[in-house]
Amino acid sequence: MVDVILGLQWGDEGKGKIVDFFAKDYDLVARFQGGPNAGHTLYVNDQKVVLHQIPSGVFREGIINLIGNGVVLDPVTLKKECDIVSSFGIDLKKSLFISERAHLILPTHRALDKAAELSKGNQKIGSTLKGIGPTYMDKTGRNGIRVGDLLDKNFTTSYIKLRLKHQRLLDNYNFQEDISAWEEEFFEALEFLKQQNIVNGEYFINNQLKAGKRILAEGAQGSMLDIDFGTFPYVTSSSTISAGVCSGLGVAPQHIRDVIGITKAYCTRVGSGPFPTELENETGEELRKIGNEFGATTGRPRRCGWIDLVALNFACMINGVTRIVMTKADVLDTFSELEVCTDYQLNGKESREIPFRMDRQKPVPLYKKFAGWNSSSNAAKSYAGLPDTMKAYIDFINEYLGVKIQYISNGPGREQIIKVV
Image: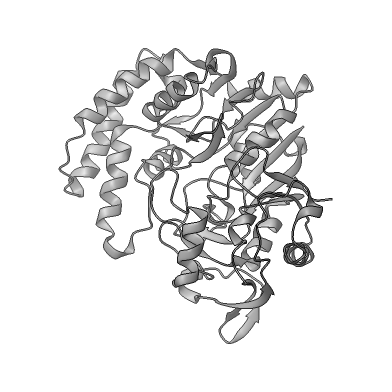
């Protein structure tokens, strides 16, 4: 069976810690989409580690980790990550496998990403400039180079052909930046990548399923950034929802069992795009400060706001969420009053549906107020130890969504996760 963990908001929900927490119950953890624009933060031996492409189960002994075909892979980032993980005594030769069908991010993909974003002026989408979008464009345009191509004698020819195509596009953008240092680093990283466990991902994972192994599929970004169902065009370039597991790993739908959705106790977003509950005031700044809301990959300050149940309900629906984990509940400890978005006002009418183009229709959030708990929750070891006002907040969200919050993260530590009775 395959269980799925994914984000229900605009990313940055704390998936890394949650995957690490659940990983002990599985035999294999697999990333099924996205690229190094994702940053999953873990704390290992009290040290902060940010993983961008390696699955978050890598620090659990005896667990196999697979980078699936749906991922776009930056060899340079991968090499740096592998060096960090290896410094903790992890033997990646035994625990990390890479699908030969995963597409490679080239230096010119990064250049194209930067050139395209600069050309948009004030219409920027907030790209992380990691080359993700251009790589997925080459994938769907049937021009991309995949990990398995590294082992082909004609790799250099394929690389030069694609690079020339990219150069013509860069010339159109009048992009003058020298990327020779990027290329040098890239080819060094390719030699490293060739030495890794490159496998036929779909047979690899299905053989694990046949052997009765338990698999956890790890998503990157969040459901509201999905290429089809997110706040288009301010989205990522891959399918971030549970349906993406099948195409991103090569597993059939009947193998999927639980879909575990992650949401913060409030809301954040990095980059541009619609964010109905954003608080551009002192409250938003306080959420950012207490929650240390800065991007794990870019360091950019995250936009902060109250929890949006209209968007969260939509995400639960399209993912078929069976269980919810709420993270960063302790960030709300100091607030005397909280608000929850229960409805949108669209064209003068109340609605609980996500509009086709949120950036054009600009929904106005309607709120329900709650008393804050105004006390520390991060020392609690059980649900009974949480403040009653926090429980009332959680009960309301459960009833609204029709899906229960089963775990609450009340701090950054591995042990700071409470199971809801």
